[in-house]
Amino acid sequence: MATRVLIPTPLRAYTGKQEALLLEGKTVGEILASLTATYAPLKRHLYDDAGALRNFVNVYVNDEDIRYLQKEQTRVTDADTVSIIPSIAGGRS
Amino acid sequence: MRESGGTATGTEARLSRDEIRRYGRHLILPEVGLEGQAKLKASSVLLVGAGGLGSPLALYLSAAGVGRIGIVDFDVVDESNLQRQILHSTPYIGRPKLVSAKDRIHAINPHVDVELFSMRLDSENALEVLRDYDVVADGTDNFPTRYLVNDACVMLKKPNVYGSIFRFEGQVSVFAAPGGPCYRCLYADPPPPGLVPSCAEGGVLGVLPGIVGTIQATETLKLLLGIGEPLVGRLLLVDALTMKTRELRLRRNPACKVCGDHPEITRLIDYEAFCGIAPPAEAGEDPDAVTVTDVKSRLDRGEEIFLLDVREPQEYEIANLGGHLIPLNDLPRRVHELDSSRDIVVYCHSGVRSGQAVQFLKTLGFRKVKNLSGGIDAWAEEIDPEMARY
Image (cartoon, rainbow over all chains, first blue to last red):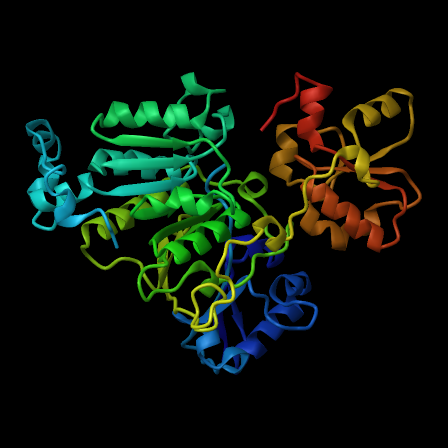
């Protein structure tokens, strides 16, 4: 069983330019652990030094923010899509 | 939402015969009609930034007949803006964006009252500037201003039509609408400087701010007219490369520091400090920095300097100093290509990425590594005027 994980443009530099990955795991936490185990430099972009998800990176299961589900314990199936949505800055200049 | 809208301004918002001809295609829409068009005429929008996102916002909102448009900007038109900032044009290079914006808006629609704010929005002036407008459209490219605009809109209860872009990807939403979430509900904190690349570093497809800014303009008009379903509580994601859009649910966070049930932030704060941005240091003050003139004279003296270029291959192709190319993201796994006993000068486009590379190499024990202040762009400006700039 593998869940589809969508990688946003700013982080594709760390996943060999891939925009979607299939990863194993029963929860969002397990999926992200599998992601950062494969692509180690991604880890500091997703987690702070204390191991908590960073405040400028949100993780969604389908269209719902995991902060309003069971956070990293949120269970996923292969029918779900996990999205990583970091803050982006651009527009004026 | 509006204090000045409705019947109070009903008389002054009557449309002239000229205006009725101009707005005919709006007037025959049942959702707009004479009443809606008069609402637009009586309404006001503040645009924060007259750049990539501000361009389609200014063009479409003025064409649509928004009565009063305010613009905050302090920049001048640069040739490299014209790839995407369609409000501006070649004859205006070197002139203030506000002048260019005003001329263009009046060329499109002389009925629009344009108000110009030649300033950097900050904690001292933001509330005063935003207060007089019905809706704020945020087209900023930096986190301090984005959090400032968000917090000010929450405090003033002004809807904030937000857009942001990176490379081929955009985000759009409406924040600070009654009952809806704000930008801090989405992202409580900004990323530390350097962790997220800017458009100046990452590039952006010129048409992307056109798409995103046009969606912002659509949302702004819907809010002013009170029609449809605005993007309140929804984050729209646009990926121009796959041409897919997605929508994510946003919720007001009861623990949000500015719009939550027990807000901690009730006055505007120091947003530069909040975003971890220190005032820019002069090259002479940074012990890890060297100037282009210094490097040039050392090379002319025949000194052995190893130049490391940490930009992307497509940037290297435009112009280079003959440096050894290792893109910043590849540096950790390619660091064995470097000899830590040599004098190394690292450069990128403007000195930001190379600064990160220097800090990274120092943690690995490199002692003789310096950052070229101002990057290859400073080299082109001060040393080699023949070099292509981007």
